[in-house]
Image (cartoon, rainbow, N blue to C red; front, top):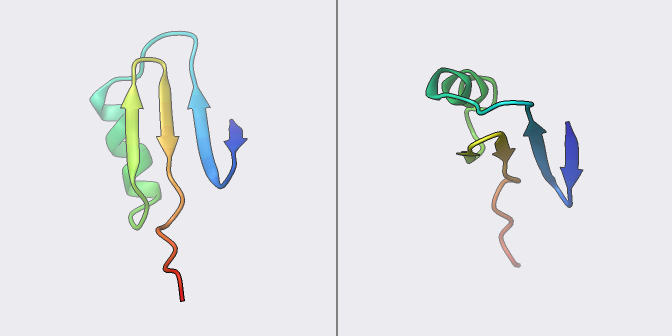
Length: 50
């Protein structure tokens, strides 16, 4: 696992599948989670400018 600013980046030796994506989304229900082959990114929550 790595951090890219406030995002968490998970990388695997092979490609992730939709079951992996759903598992991560379940662990972070209030965050945007995306998949791109061997990378799953857990994006930071949207920050409002005040």
